[in-house]
Length: 78
Image: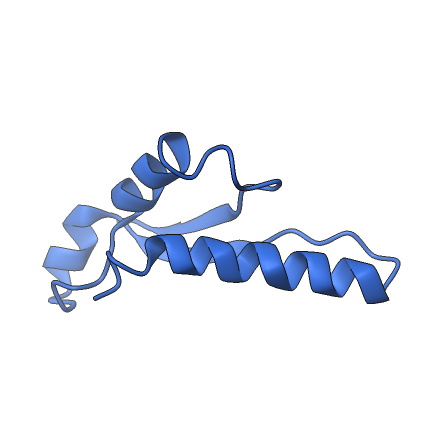
């Protein structure tokens, strides 16, 4: 269930970013491809997939203080 994995996805971004920046001289920027609620329904995607709105809520509240760099969201919208 992707909704339960939102925090894990953020943690993976944070760990990968830190690890890459330790061994390279480049800064990184996480990107996350998501769809908004209406497009998840419109295209019949599995109900376990978290929408942009759910990720946005997670970044604003429970995970705001643990992320050093918030991901850029590429949102599928019509």
